[in-house]
Amino acid sequence: MKSITMLAALIGLAWCPPQDPPAGPKEEIFAAARKLAEQDTYAWSLEIDRRDVAKVSPGASQPILPMIVSIAGRSAKSGFVILKQTRMANVQAVSAILKGTRAVLETMDGWKLSGDLDPEKDVNARFFAGVLPYYPAPTEEVKTLLEGVRELKEGPDGGRVGELSEAAARTQVERTLKGGGRKDPPEIKEPRGTVRFWIQDGLILKYDIATQAKVTVNDVEIVLKRTLTVKVKDVNTTPVPVPEEASKILR
Image (cartoon, rainbow, N blue to C red; front, side, top):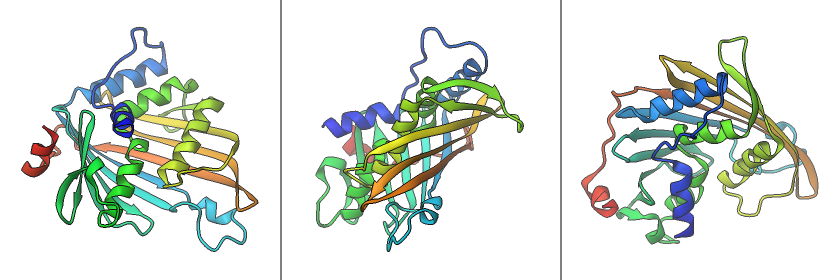
């Protein structure tokens, strides 16, 4: 139950705007995220690129984390969120549907609540359920990012760019490690990161988060780098199909 409560908080199915939003570029991004949350439906893609890890991991026979992670999401104002892991190391594609504090995942035996997954038969689904809290919907993630950014400025490409505080950067690095399936991540040193936002027609169009930190794995210190990119698309035109079996379980 604790993990599901954490999942609901991070997925952020409802937008909760601050009472006194900051002025300037931050306010602009807050407003764009709020407006996106008010749309009937939208889709998004998330990709995490960790290929730089391979360049700084001397002697490693295997990467400490999946190099590329790709997740496709769909969100409806009704409260349903569909997530599909499309690329994550050797894990097969898995779909999850969330509403409120509950999540069901697709298995060979049909849809199951995350807490009912079989540890032997539903290995891939259990793995995806474990990392779901680290992949929130864009509207909630943008709010969290803005709370951790010192200042936003206009970038050369029309976006808004800002530097993450050390605490916010550390949180993102921890997310990289735990979202990659590491239950006991190594100590994190010198975390830093930047975030960029783009808007179109008053809506969040895209954002990316670039972080790096030093971590020690197998007595070897490496520089862990990660770039996470989220792109929003098909606002008010994307379908959010929820199978009847999954819908019944989530009621």
